[in-house]
Amino acid sequence: MGIQRDRVRFNVGGKIFETSATTLANAGRNSMFGAMFDENWNLQSSEVDEYFIDRNPACFSVLLDLLRTGELHIPTNIPEKLIYREALYYGLLDHVRASKFGQFDGNRLKLAMSVTGRAPGDGTAIRAGPDGGCCVADGSMVHVYDWMLEEHPPIHLNYQTVNDMGWIDSENIVISACERLGRGDGGMGLFSSSTGDLRYKFQVSHENQVKSFTAGALSFSSDYRIFASCKGRSNEYGIGVWDHVTGQQSDFFYESLGWSLGDADRLQWLHERNCLLVATLFPRKDNCYISLLDFRVKRMVWSWSDIEAPVTVVEKRVRDAIAMEDTSSICVVNEYEDLGFMDLRREGGCVRWSSRSRLMKGKMPDEPCCPKLALHGGQLFSSMNDSISVFCGSDWVLTSRLRRSYGGSICDFSIGGDRLFALHSEENVFDMWETPPPPII
Image (cartoon, rainbow, N blue to C red; front, top):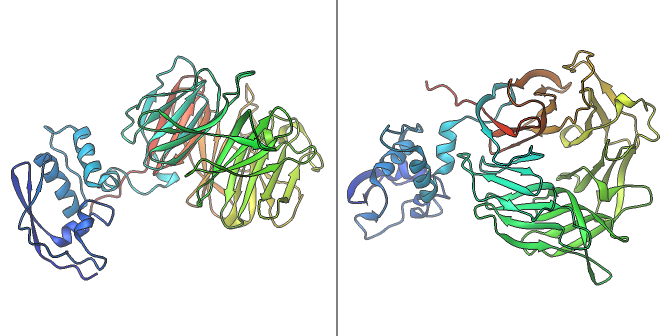
């Protein structure tokens, strides 16, 4: 980079600060200070000797020191919330977050905070946001938290039951819900994460008619598409596709005979294969169905069902599934935390079950469990009862376990924004796990 080492002078709220172009360049292109440089990272020429900013000078001093040293030191007389607000204004929030915790690593996660739910009932689902916040579904309500875990105005769905949620970005959340009989007000909508306001609803059209439907599992692709399992009243069962920028329906994959796409529990977009994984799992259905849909050719390009699987005993029923593109495989889990693997290169192949990573050590759970799977940074995560197991390596060896004593069993967990959030079912509480920052040398 051709950074000019010129001195830059700021007047912030009446207090004078001087720094260098090199320090300001540490703020990055997306910050307020990044706009002061040209495309070659040279400080743009200006006849202005001094830049005036009508903001808090004490906070500016803290943030300027962060750019100089990479370390965040907040004086005791300045509330952290004030620093975060000013960091958001300058576009430095990522720098503040990076100084608070390190790069995500499942084997080094530490419990950072537990938050008691605001609703009277138990939470049902949790989704991590891209900026380190999260949202929690509880019946007909979704509670939204920013990365400081301060709650925004909740999203009310007028007594519709939330089925799934997903973050489009830090400002927008898509929520799918059941349609109330005779009301036609189900489906899914895009909501503001900061105000809870409905921005628009997604519609299903069939034969030039708008249909009422229940939206289930959600998934998102990098080219701004939203996928949702849809269950209507006539023949509009399957997977709908919408453009999340315009809200317009762009495609619909109708389920084939006997294949329950409209009841899917999990959707996952596979970027490399340009296909959508669709999984309908036990106990929603007695038989499990997993398939890959290619919307370009309008057909399933891979499928598996335990109807024809060699192992049909009850304890092998699949509770969750996730595709791992790096290894061309699908991982499944049952209620005893047996991990199973299927080869995507062989359609309809059997599940290779492995119980060596099981934490239960043969003990039967008191109640049926609903384990969940997640993949992040080459690590595999699986929840079971009140803990989350971390698996690493080509053989997916158990390397660590996350657990705390309060809250009961885990009904859902999610990873995003360099954090892991775990929602407990017996108490309406969720935990936040972070990776500690590396030691200062």
